[in-house]
Image (cartoon, rainbow, N blue to C red; front, side, top):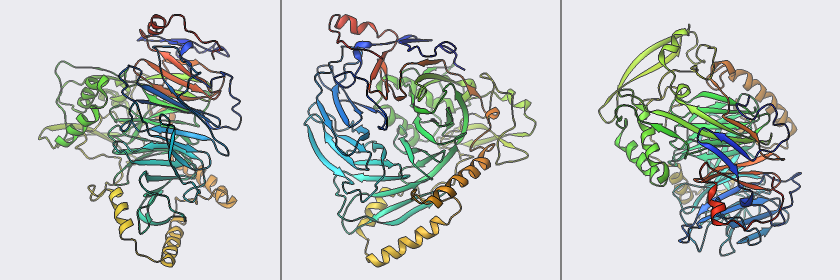
Length: 605
């Protein structure tokens, strides 16, 4: 399946690869690992993860890197393509007993050269807030494991907040914390705040402010990863039950869902403009989902095993204007949201602003190509291009469809413009998939309609909140002030709600230790998979375009667990504990010019 490097890549580790931009090269002197450079015996340990933050250091070395290997956590100055890594001088190193770090995240808002806020999640369920520059441990959350006893799978600061963070567990629950609040000495009591299709949100009942502020129960089985949209307003969740669920974060409204072709979803990411979501998992595929249309628009096949990480490359997304520039189609609020989102991403400003113009069908569309990458347990790195023939199929191709009605709808936008859009409904089954095509890379699959503007209704999304102005986070704060129920009433109420929820059609209890629940869960999952295949939730393989990777290279001996795109390079890591830097085309000479002789010894993977 690989467009390049297939066939005879067997066991040979690649140190460079070529794309249309040029040659990406592995910088052997910029490798980070444990100081002894010995490959880590990864049997039974948690995945190696990497986090970056920029502290705006005046010296030009503002990047900091954190990574976990087994029971150890390291914090270094990241020199990237500029200078060789000096592993003998970590800024901070921590070794944990009885538990292992599983994930971590820096707060970019509070980071300075003198202090950073780093959240670390652990295999036993705790979350630690540390400052590796000051070498301080500020707080430990869920210390007694009264909130959740299962492994932390993902931890993220809420975008734009200096104090709120979200934590996901393998139990399938997510918790919203405030660093200023304590966790309490007893198990929290919850009150149902919102319930929807296979998800529920509870607030913590307490007479005083305490953590967690909210508990989200999402799907069945582990919640493997979540990701905030670039504007921080939406949350994409990848779950072990195979579902991608996208929520409006403040109102906790389900915006849309997608089902994997097979097995659980392990990873998820957003495009830089927030229009597309890519997910990967146990079906060995990468799946591209349109946020505006709430449907699968493409799948990519190149991996030979589970896909562990997906990430968009904001630096290689290319946008070319048409003959005349298109105006922003949408409300003033949408326009200001776009400007606010772009403020923190100066490098791709021009690309992001023009990406928003692609909605308008009145003027000549711009040419768009999104670049994203994936790494997997097959030790391979794949790079993919999402091109406009996949994103915006041309209408003449839809004439080959036999059971489709094409309707033209004209709707005024909030700005007073009239935008003509095309919607397609299947004649035989309006809720089902579109007619089948013989699909190649250049052919169109799914709806050939252009992405709908924000101001227009979304055809496949679930009903929106009646009053979207009410923030569920605000409700959580209000609930803590007015919680006056007695403990007896609290238990009775919670039991009744749990009883109702556990006997709904789509819900399986999260207590995985119960063998009966496990058995019924597996049966339900198989039944649900059979029901969703061939629908808009999970189109059949021939119903959507199948992408092939631009690059598919074996780059490690052990399974890959990290892929991060930076301005000058991309960073990968494998389970042996080696963090590798790949210089972008034209950036490889910086290291040799600045530091020709300082090369540490050691074996490079």
